[in-house]
Image (cartoon, rainbow, N blue to C red):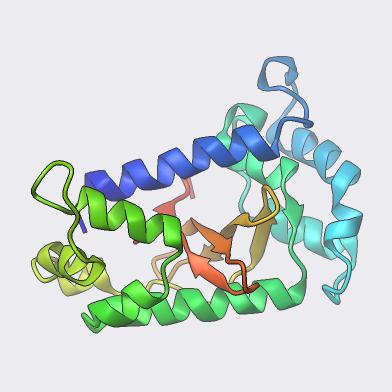
Length: 213
């Protein structure tokens, strides 16, 4: 898919999610400490409920969260999500992992129908509108991703998940960000969304590498 469109899609969802999900956390302007201390403070406030049913202690989860923090404290959107979001339970993480694996595997094998089947309603609407060569018209998801995906290199389409989702931070009732370790040694995040049937869907065509990871 067009890298610029992918980046715009992720950034729009990221900005919206931060605004909706992090309003109650410490503001960037008031954070003068290090990234670690800022994150520790926010996690103490809201992590207990998020860990219910996860099978892990709060201390263990905090260690996993620390793997994805970046320098800059709450001035960085990634850290705002980690601090302000509510951690999904183990069942949610497993479900998000399954749909991401399915989506990335479909993309790697150029199964555009399979990839489109994993996308959320909002992601589908975006792809079908922004992928159309005619302003105001729509193009099917399959045709849209195929038109660009077939020109991409195998490396660009490859499933880069080294292991299942490590962190799933809910930013509101239905939206969340999945964090995982990549096969290239970098860390990644991608927006996911829970539909009306309680199933997790992918809210973007590609993940974003976390800066500095």
